[in-house]
Image (tube, rainbow, N blue to C red; front, side, top):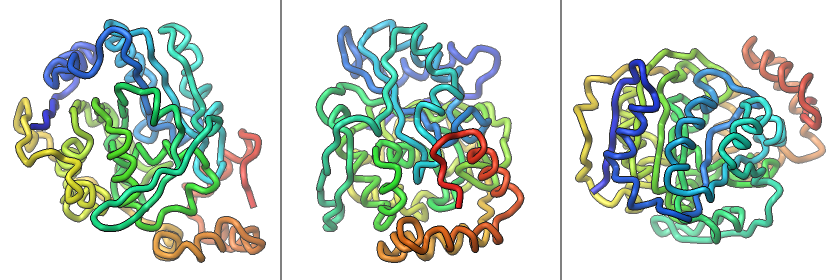
Length: 336
């Protein structure tokens, strides 16, 4: 049986979080000396409400985990298509100070030795690149994500957050074909035991890098990433059966049972979110999520600079703002 705790955060976030951890009986997963790895969502080089994991949420999770073990690592990979380095995100989310405060090791997953992991998901052979650290040296994997919409995958919750464990940012954008099966393989291999979906601020309209922040005031804690995403997607007004990666993960058996124990009726928190795709979103989804050849042509070929010049003409005001923000501030950005 999967367990899900969901509640409104009123005045005391840390107390609500503690009750959530106790509800899922987190002591089964972490004891003295347990090796814990925490994966936040740092899809932007500094904290943006609704877009990236709130540093204070991370601080409160660390306060709890430190009660049981000192062996804690926190990490993220470089930004998609090498837009920014993980170190930029660490600095922009105050991770250097927070991790030093709690004695936590901070890791750029893109700098670690990795290996290709192969597996069969629903009869289809897929493979993903993952850091060996996550495969060999972790007893409890914790995913800290958000309630947010995503232009390419409709929603970005706990399963989508795992895609950031693919350490090669340049290749990651080329590997979106069969993404539901690949996300499921990562979830199957890494086996997140604690899932936190932080909805204190959610993201509506457009994701993953910009959109409309919503003061949602909600937190969800679970012991199963698929069960968590199924309920979270319904809270946001979406059918999990129509979200490819959630549906694939469920059919692949990553949710151990339809029998989910929830502390209260989640329907009282339902709110309809909307995904607004741009022209670039639609063409990107059509050309790169279905065909590896066109993905390589667009992202990694002699034609890439020319394609980006055309794309630049079609960008919305918000897209231009994101490009300008990251290109001016962060070294190594691909800005064609």
